[in-house]
Length: 108
Length: 108
DNA sequence: CTGACTGTTCTACGGATCTCGAACAGTCAG
DNA sequence: CTGACTGTTCGAGATCCGTAGAACAGTCAG
Image (cartoon, rainbow over all chains, first blue to last red; front, side):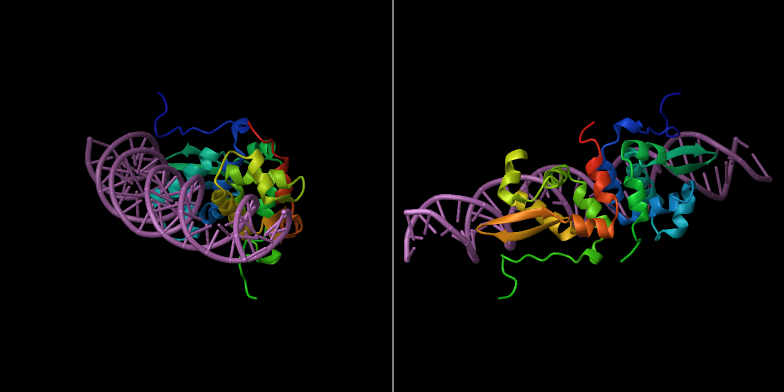
C-alpha cells in the first residue's frame, strides 16, 4: 500500500533547508500554529479553534507547508490527524533556532 | 531637508516584527547577503561580487526588504552606501535568533 | 452498509514577490 | 561644470503564495 493520502512524506532531519524553515515560520498563521504546538501535540481540528476562521483546505495547506519544511509531523490518528512539532529534528539541524523563535515576544 | 533618497528609514529595535525578520531571512539571496555581512559591514557594491549576477535594482530591492525588517542598516557613505548587520537590535529583540541562523550549516 | 465526520487534493483567483531595464538623484574626479 | 559612478525608485512581466469552495478518500458509529 504505497503512499496514499494517509501516509504523508516527511523530510529527514538532515535534509531540512534553513530558508524553507524560515519561510514556513514567516507566516503569522503558521507561526501561531507552531506556538500552539509548542505546548504539545494537537489534533489538527484543535488548531481551528484558536485560529481565525479559515477553511479546512487553508489549514491543510499551511500544515503542508510546515510539514514539507520539516517543522511539524502529521500522522494519522483514527479519523483525525495528530500534528506535532518536530523539535528533535529542528534542534538537531538548527540548534537554538526554534527556541529563539518561541521565546520571542508574541506581539509588539 | 526631509527624507530624501539619502536618508532611508530604519525601524526602531523595539518595533521589529518576528515574521518580517523571518521572511527577510527566508530568501536564499538575502540570507547570503546577511551571512556576508556577519563578517563585517560592507559597501553595497561588494555584495555584488560574491552573489550571482543580479541587476543593481534587484540588489537594492533585497537590501530594502532586509532594512525594512530591521535586519540591516543602510547609511550614506560618500557616493556609496555602507550596509551593516543590526546585530544589536536583533539580539535585543530576538535573543539567539541571529546566532542560530548564522550557525546553521550553509548548505546540505 | 449508510451516513456523518476529518482531512487531503484539485482548481481557481486576487495579491504579493522576484526580477529587470530605464529614469532619476546624489557624489566625486577632472 | 561636466562626466563617470553608485544606488534608489518606478514601471512592467512572470511567478509564487494565501485563501477558499468543491470533490474525493479514509474512519468510525449505528
